[in-house]
Image 1: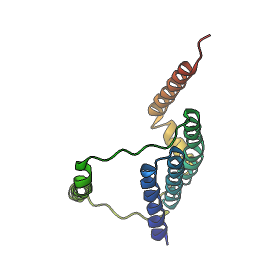
Image 2 (image 1 turned 90 degrees about the vertical axis):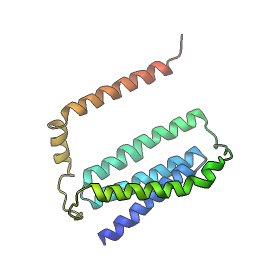
Image 3 (image 1 turned 90 degrees about the horizontal axis):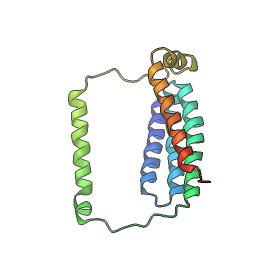
Length: 165
């Protein structure tokens, strides 16, 4: 049952990802991105990372997507106009993509060591306590650097949005 759910939500994530790129209207793309994030949250649940699934839904599918939609509405972005594609892209795009994917899959199978298969629910490091302990001990410096970068981005946004008096 776990494998079926994994493939189902992986297919949903891929389909929403493709729809995200194909859509011409920005709001439709944002909704497709919410679908991708929801499917990823379910995949996290299947792997036993409950905290990551909750953070995925609250932070990304909730807060970040509200921010994206707000910016889209603020910019009053309309539907994208399609331009004619180059002849090269029409003729060689799909075969080049298939060749690239075949090459990458061959390299992954040839160069990466064999590992044991994933056992659904066997991972126990996805709790809030385990993530908090790792975050504030082993990964404290990257956490603080990220905090400073986010603070700088917020200050930059305030300076750019400020009106001259």
